[in-house]
Length: 266
Figure 1 (cartoon, rainbow, N blue to C red):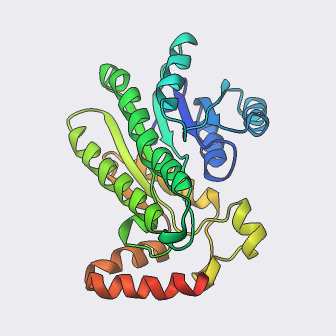
Figure 2 (figure 1 turned 90 degrees about the vertical axis):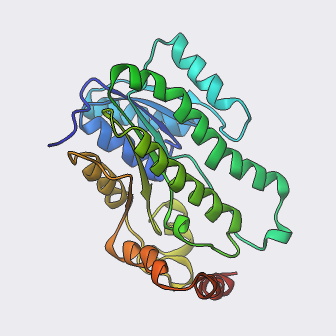
């Protein structure tokens, strides 16, 4: 049975492009009002205007930089002033860096951890009480197929996504006796603006064909429509096979294979 989002409010971080925009489109198409969060107000406003026009829902734009400590708390205080209660939280904001760890900018790595882990946890913690009180809600955290293995040259990024996967699956289990759902979505290479420009629609390093944002988000929405949604879902059969095959390979061998693939990209 399809989940009913009519009249519910969905907060989406990283909502100015890519997967975040597609979550806005699909949730609005199913009747959800939106709170769109990102750093770029002009891009957010374009998304908000489009969904309001097409789907006749409300769309509130809030500019926030989740790399800043305290941004999540500030965001929820803004929601409280606007008397907005969150029924669906999509923690989509996140970013990665590529290169040798030794050469990485420590400030950029700290921001990556703040956005990918700390802000995600804080937003989940702030959204959960009202969901528990209503005994209804969704917390969807965007992880990555990188969560399933170590990724040399993207060491911090992969580690943050492994955290997201583990955290979300644990939260899913804690909520089993309620009607609040936690689920992790793990896309592989996805055709965003960056990949379209830089790689002509193909994953860097010959890692295969990229999925569209529509395909990725539809996987998550379909999983949430199940009577008992799973704790996590991987987008794409090839990505699923690649991510889960690591269970059959010794970790030492797996990380060496990953090193060879990503070193060639470097």
